[in-house]
Image 1: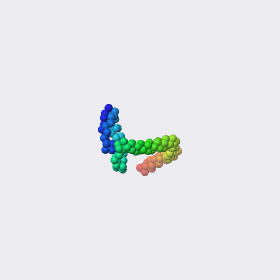
Image 2: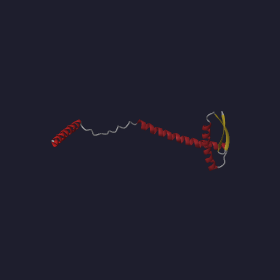
Image 3: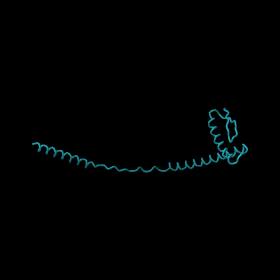
Image 4: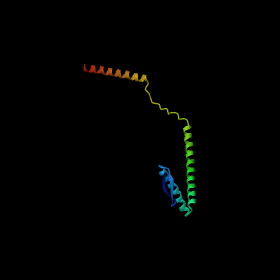
Amino acid sequence: MADLEITIGNKSFTVACQDGQEQFLRNAARQLSDQADALLQQIGRMPAEKMLLMAGLMLADKTISAEQDLAKTRAALAELEARPAPEPERIEVPVIPPIVVETMAELAARTEAMAASLEEKASA
Protein backbone atom coordinates (compact mmCIF):
# COMPACT_ATOMS: atom_id res chain seq x y z
CA MET A 1 0.00 0.00 0.00
CA ALA A 2 1.13 3.49 -0.82
CA ASP A 3 0.76 6.53 1.42
CA LEU A 4 -0.29 9.66 -0.42
CA GLU A 5 -0.18 13.24 0.79
CA ILE A 6 -3.27 15.13 -0.42
CA THR A 7 -4.46 18.65 0.27
CA ILE A 8 -8.13 19.51 0.61
CA GLY A 9 -9.22 23.01 1.47
CA ASN A 10 -5.72 24.10 2.51
CA LYS A 11 -5.43 21.13 4.88
CA SER A 12 -3.00 18.29 4.26
CA PHE A 13 -3.87 14.65 4.88
CA THR A 14 -1.94 11.42 4.53
CA VAL A 15 -4.07 8.71 2.97
CA ALA A 16 -3.22 5.08 2.27
CA CYS A 17 -4.30 3.56 -1.02
CA GLN A 18 -3.69 0.37 -2.94
CA ASP A 19 -0.80 0.28 -5.35
CA GLY A 20 -1.83 1.48 -8.77
CA GLN A 21 -4.74 3.57 -7.42
CA GLU A 22 -2.70 6.68 -6.68
CA GLN A 23 -3.87 8.68 -9.72
CA PHE A 24 -7.51 7.82 -9.01
CA LEU A 25 -7.09 9.04 -5.42
CA ARG A 26 -5.35 12.25 -6.58
CA ASN A 27 -8.22 12.97 -9.00
CA ALA A 28 -10.85 12.32 -6.32
CA ALA A 29 -8.94 14.50 -3.85
CA ARG A 30 -8.72 17.28 -6.47
CA GLN A 31 -12.49 17.22 -6.96
CA LEU A 32 -13.11 17.27 -3.21
CA SER A 33 -10.58 20.07 -2.80
CA ASP A 34 -12.27 22.12 -5.54
CA GLN A 35 -15.57 21.88 -3.65
CA ALA A 36 -13.87 22.70 -0.35
CA ASP A 37 -12.16 25.73 -1.91
CA ALA A 38 -15.52 26.98 -3.19
CA LEU A 39 -16.97 26.61 0.32
CA LEU A 40 -14.05 28.42 1.91
CA GLN A 41 -14.46 31.31 -0.54
CA GLN A 42 -18.17 31.59 0.30
CA ILE A 43 -18.10 30.97 4.04
CA GLY A 44 -14.52 31.48 5.15
CA ARG A 45 -12.88 29.42 7.86
CA MET A 46 -14.63 26.33 9.15
CA PRO A 47 -13.65 23.13 10.95
CA ALA A 48 -12.11 20.48 8.67
CA GLU A 49 -14.86 17.97 9.49
CA LYS A 50 -17.62 20.36 8.45
CA MET A 51 -15.71 21.45 5.34
CA LEU A 52 -15.22 17.82 4.26
CA LEU A 53 -18.85 16.97 5.02
CA MET A 54 -20.18 19.90 3.00
CA ALA A 55 -17.76 19.30 0.11
CA GLY A 56 -18.73 15.61 0.09
CA LEU A 57 -22.42 16.51 0.02
CA MET A 58 -21.84 18.92 -2.86
CA LEU A 59 -20.05 16.18 -4.82
CA ALA A 60 -22.83 13.73 -3.99
CA ASP A 61 -25.38 16.22 -5.33
CA LYS A 62 -23.42 16.53 -8.58
CA THR A 63 -23.15 12.75 -8.80
CA ILE A 64 -26.89 12.29 -8.29
CA SER A 65 -27.62 14.89 -10.96
CA ALA A 66 -25.23 13.17 -13.38
CA GLU A 67 -26.82 9.79 -12.63
CA GLN A 68 -30.29 11.21 -13.31
CA ASP A 69 -29.10 12.70 -16.60
CA LEU A 70 -27.53 9.37 -17.52
CA ALA A 71 -30.77 7.53 -16.69
CA LYS A 72 -32.74 9.94 -18.90
CA THR A 73 -30.25 9.50 -21.71
CA ARG A 74 -30.39 5.72 -21.40
CA ALA A 75 -34.20 5.80 -21.45
CA ALA A 76 -34.19 7.99 -24.57
CA LEU A 77 -31.68 5.66 -26.21
CA ALA A 78 -33.77 2.61 -25.32
CA GLU A 79 -36.83 4.32 -26.81
CA LEU A 80 -34.95 5.05 -30.03
CA GLU A 81 -33.61 1.50 -30.20
CA ALA A 82 -37.12 0.10 -29.66
CA ARG A 83 -38.53 1.96 -32.64
CA PRO A 84 -38.86 -0.10 -35.78
CA ALA A 85 -36.37 0.66 -38.47
CA PRO A 86 -37.71 3.06 -41.07
CA GLU A 87 -38.78 1.62 -44.38
CA PRO A 88 -35.98 1.82 -46.89
CA GLU A 89 -36.40 4.71 -49.27
CA ARG A 90 -37.47 3.57 -52.69
CA ILE A 91 -35.47 5.08 -55.49
CA GLU A 92 -36.63 4.47 -59.02
CA VAL A 93 -34.03 4.40 -61.71
CA PRO A 94 -35.30 4.72 -65.26
CA VAL A 95 -34.74 1.52 -67.18
CA ILE A 96 -34.87 1.35 -70.95
CA PRO A 97 -37.20 -1.49 -71.93
CA PRO A 98 -35.54 -4.24 -73.98
CA ILE A 99 -37.85 -3.59 -76.95
CA VAL A 100 -36.54 -0.02 -77.23
CA VAL A 101 -32.94 -1.24 -77.10
CA GLU A 102 -33.65 -3.79 -79.81
CA THR A 103 -35.44 -1.21 -82.00
CA MET A 104 -32.57 1.27 -81.67
CA ALA A 105 -30.06 -1.47 -82.61
CA GLU A 106 -32.15 -2.33 -85.65
CA LEU A 107 -32.36 1.35 -86.69
CA ALA A 108 -28.59 1.73 -86.25
CA ALA A 109 -28.00 -1.33 -88.43
CA ARG A 110 -30.34 0.00 -91.14
CA THR A 111 -28.65 3.43 -91.01
CA GLU A 112 -25.22 1.87 -91.40
CA ALA A 113 -26.48 -0.22 -94.34
CA MET A 114 -27.92 2.86 -96.00
CA ALA A 115 -24.66 4.78 -95.45
CA ALA A 116 -22.67 1.93 -96.98
CA SER A 117 -25.03 1.82 -99.95
CA LEU A 118 -24.71 5.57 -100.48
CA GLU A 119 -20.90 5.39 -100.29
CA GLU A 120 -20.95 2.58 -102.85
CA LYS A 121 -23.15 4.59 -105.24
CA ALA A 122 -21.06 7.73 -104.74
CA SER A 123 -17.79 6.01 -105.54
CA ALA A 124 -19.17 4.38 -108.70
